[in-house]
Length: 281
Image (cartoon, rainbow, N blue to C red; front, side, top):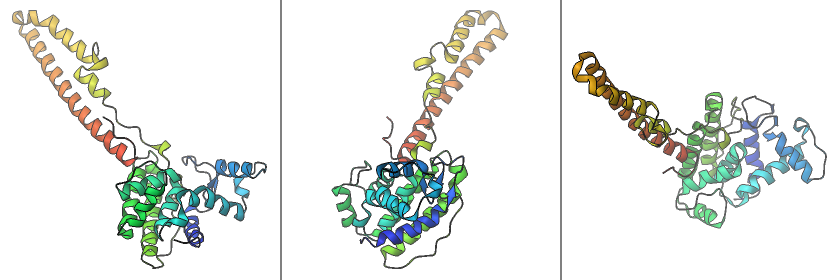
């Protein structure tokens, strides 16, 4: 829980971030050592300096950005050893608010709002097992990453990164040094909620079971055909079979719609949990 931890934590973060990248599927865009162009532009503007290519960023500028934008935002100087690095790395990769949410979810009993206030800090100080807390933070982070649509592209790199973060964090929490980290391809891609996979909608199920906008849709068409043919069923075996088939088809569609609706609600709830959103009603 010292200011010296910033330099050690930044050294590890920079291993994951690598150098100059501009991957088309990375929402961060043009990036140098983990600092994206937009953040660098904001930093230069605040300093009264003209815009500059982030690829030409100086080391002193980089360190100032990391401290102000991420370390201070998650109160790194106030956090215990190990936890400071874990929350800091999450902030760099997914934003301070999201990383704080993972910490708050892992703590339990505190409001999950992404704001690092005194209640959250007190809960960290009171937690009896920092090793377990770090494991829980990393588990929340992995659940979030798996809910992003670019998981197929960057999932392996993110997994390697979080695994290394957990190992280092737990080592520091116990007073050890931890393993030597290696850069993993794709682990430096920004992972933000803007890349979340859209939640499954129960609306398809509503259509199938004739609810809401379904009236006049497929279910309505089947019912109209059944009503029109039913009076003729007694005079023709073929028409009788058609009516029976319509009844069975309607039942299958209705049951399928109900099952889909249940699946969609469960899927949406799991997605909301992974992304730290309010669970849908």
